Each structure stands twice: as structure tokens, then as C-alpha cells.
Image 1 (tube, rainbow, N blue to C red):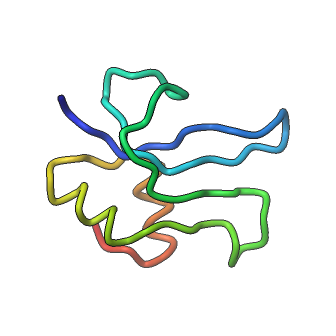
Image 2 (cartoon, rainbow, N blue to C red; image 1 turned 90 degrees about the vertical axis):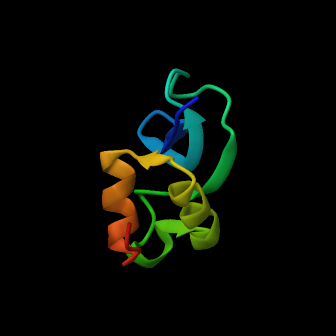
Length: 82
């Protein structure tokens, strides 16, 4: 099983928010997640948009999980080095 750190969509039409999760690469976007790592609210104020647990992200990256391009950009906004 290969794991991937990606976004899981929630919210309503025109009011989305996302959870940063670890999922199997074969599972659908809104399927069952292995673990939830944080949140991303694109509509919120700049300082409240991104929140995540850096220790959990490092753990999953060290154990072979890969981050999607979008998640990589989001983590780079918070100066988290991959």
C-alpha cells in the first residue's frame, strides 16, 4: 500500500474547506482516510487558513508517504520543509 498526503473536500457549494489527510493512493478523494493531519480553509483570513501537526507530517513523509502538489504548496506557505 502506498500512502499519499492529500486534501479531502468538505463544506458546501462555494464555501469549501479541506482536511489534510493520509490516504491510500487508490482510494477516492472523499473516501476513508488513514489519518487526519490538519485543515485548510481557503476562504478564511490569511493567518487562519492553514493548520496542521508538523510532527505527524514528518512521520508520514519519513515512512514513505508522498505529498500531492497542492499539499506541498500549502505546507510551503507555512515554511514547512519537505
